[in-house]
Length: 469
Image 1: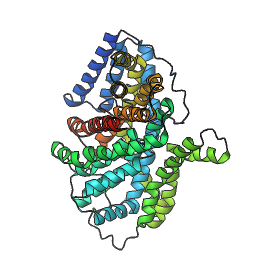
Image 2: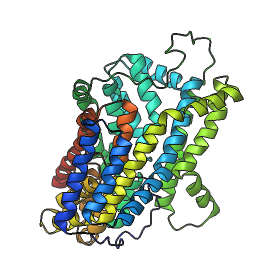
Image 3: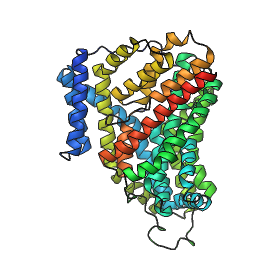
Image 4: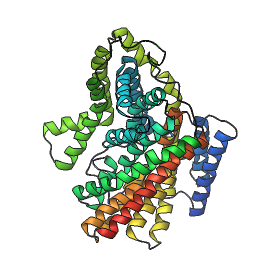
């Protein structure tokens, strides 16, 4: 779930959530809720939006919430998700369609294919995902890159999973491990870690993590989910038309349009690090234009002029491209919104608090403890950001007793745990499923396993570093 990001947050004392029922009641309600959602979708073939709605309200009431409070929690979660992730998906879809219709996506894809052999394409896409994902929340990076993923798979003849999985691995690993991504920055601020040290350790851990969860795992994912390329972003070249004479944006223009939101959000993150207390006008401007929704809106406007002109599109064809981008994502928006609502119900019932309490009483190693807390909050709430905030806040007092390098490793352990086991209460799960056209079991076998690999390999990397620093 997207949340507004500022570096200085009162993380050490988050407002406590009072569980609405006994521990046993909360855990039982959550387990039954997950099972009902999965059965409704896989066995009864109920639309995921309806299944998530039924599951969310059922969990809230079963956990002990009054019916009006369960409905209010559902509505708040749905509204917050649609106001955050929903807006980003809509803007990203409009930009993606414009990128495809103008020929900009063709230009990028043709360049990637020309410079990479089919064997090297998964590795290339892993690097692309990592670069795009560095300053971005996962959902934004996905909606920006999905046209490239689909067109590369279609043109190259390489399995969709061998293209998509490495890209997703790069996006997700950056989300959890490497500052200046907002997630790690939240933990750095809460725990008082050194930014440079955490960045260096994060890159060291992220590289093998992306390799294992991306190009290496993609071969297994392709066998477990042999899906075809979705019928999306079909371009003139895909329809067999001769595009050699058709005007297309230059590679530089197309690449600049994709990287523009990356640079805007990167600038906001870096300013938050190096000038957190500044109130100068320039900082306010960067804070504004680096906000995800504004960055994507600026990118869309930039694309209308630069990509539209490069592709010889007039006002009518630009308008038609933007208008036709929204109907195909209507179902995705509803599913993502319902996933956010389910997540909010789980948070408001206090299930995450119950799990965290139990783990803190276990007396295990600090790095493993931070990872486990983040994992359990992630499983319970579906939010990597909330898992990071919760785990970092709970580990603050412990971090004050640790040497600098170990505090940096604790940040990475928490970040690794925050991406573990994406499932039905995670908006990203449904976004990946709908865009790639996988079934529910296939999404578990590919996307969910990928997230677990990133989490576990990241933890192993942290523990190995702890032996030598």
